[in-house]
View 1 (cartoon, rainbow, N blue to C red):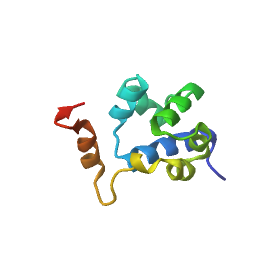
View 2 (view 1 turned 135 degrees about the vertical axis):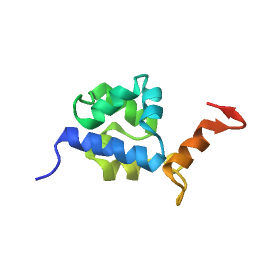
View 3 (view 1 turned 90 degrees about the vertical axis):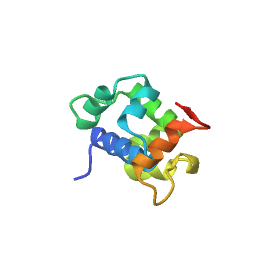
Length: 105
């Protein structure tokens, strides 16, 4: 049996976090929520709302349908410029994303 919709969204968000090298904290900041709220949604103790899905999709530059379809489609739809460099660890990508032109973001 396949994943239900909630599982597909959680898996897609996890795959996008990995593919971009972002942390839950960075995603939370972009969505205007706390890292704990993202964590609860990812753990399944709270649900991602449709508005959340729209916001996550917009943040990653993908269509909400691609997010709802699951991790494979979501990561395939991710724009190339949003992907972390191949062979680069996720925490390295995060560090590079937070410091640009000598300014900490």
